[in-house]
Image (cartoon, rainbow, N blue to C red; front, side):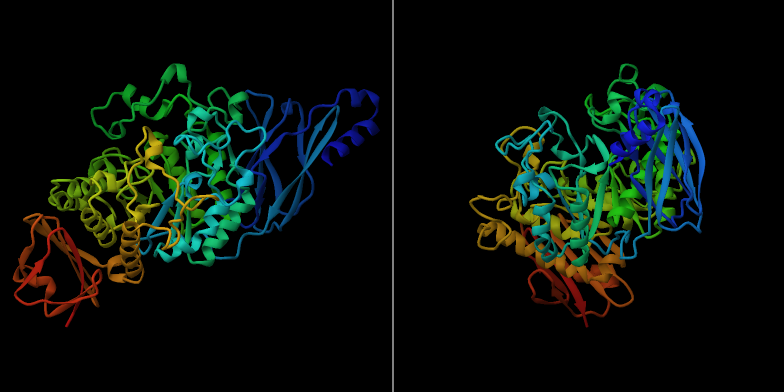
Length: 615
């Protein structure tokens, strides 16, 4: 319709103007916005050939004014900032792009804000279920291959696309809910139209930040998925990446400015050394290589020092929250981006959505380096404050993997937790046994079922916000293949024609059912265990590879005993009297048995106990 209107306008203006017709506008980002946002302006990136030759005006819409128009190096872009007063109402704002050859008009929509529960955040009351959409379930095989896209489906290749999508996830929301999970985190859903050999099914090489990958579904399909999750009281956490994009992002063919991305020839690839950000002895070169170099050669590094780009990224985040109703964000490669920008972004999100939560991926092995990135870190050597509520607790994850691995020492957990005084709020950290980047935990412990139960018990009862990687509930091992695909197996039964379905009891093996029951019982119990969500943690120095700790508040006390030894251990309970106090028994959440608390307690080898203490 727009093409027809433009042609009519030019023909009415006369033959000379018709011959001088300029191409129409290709896109406007964001495609729409809202009234009554805390942010009083929205800056539109308008893209089309030779736009800089056009004069911009806006039609009458009460409460909306044209604040500024910014031209850049590339004449195909204009940045148009609108100011939206509190008095503005929903409707359309006509945008006029005038030229001697005629006027192009686009209607920019202003919508009312959402009224349903959304942007709820997540906390230690939640258990997060992490899945990769491509590997979980395929509910719409018709979108497996999209005409014009570079990659279709090949399930025989562990590093290719397998066809999982939003429809498949929606079909199994009840399965996730029944496990006791309360939040759902999916790896990135943005369009990733990259060549097959780039493995872009993972989603971390975006080629359009305002569009979901059509092989997952549509933007509307994602909104319906969020709605379906909310109907089951499942929160949704979206994975975002502001450090880099995919090499085939549409910007790369025609970037807005010469410094939109960092120059690869100058910076090369990153050193991946996160400590360089706060290393007091770091060279300027090393720091710059961490933040300004490309993550890998196929992922151009965004230059957040460019104010127009920074504004674009911030608005993109707010657009996804408001348009889809998500509840939280996991920000990928947090410390690889410009840290001043990351604070600006986080603050903008939290100002607009005070209940929202963000966890930043900070893949570092030490507590001090991890703590630096959490909001209000008191010992910041450079005065930096991230305004970031939560970080990924890699130090504790590594400690769990060491503690429960063959010949592991459970003392590793104690030593790591003794450093929690460094964190501004350790209970806001996201804890995990594994994720899409780490080897499957069950393989790390050499398929030891006892080690799995011990570790999962610790994950569910220590401080923090636990995250569970999909198929962990089945004790999923690594696949016997090379590369990242080994960590990212398909869920059997998620695809039409699969020989069995792990989404049903009859489709699981005996071992998988045993693990599934264990995970479901413990996770479901945790859902209503406020003492684990918010209670104080008191632990005792491990002895004989056995660790005893308590979660307690004014009303409840839970005693955890993790016997990681190869023999039974008899504990002298007098050592724990300060926390057992007058309690004489406890109900073991795992076994369901009532356990007397007299002078001693014998714990079988390689066994966890979770005792709700009673009088």
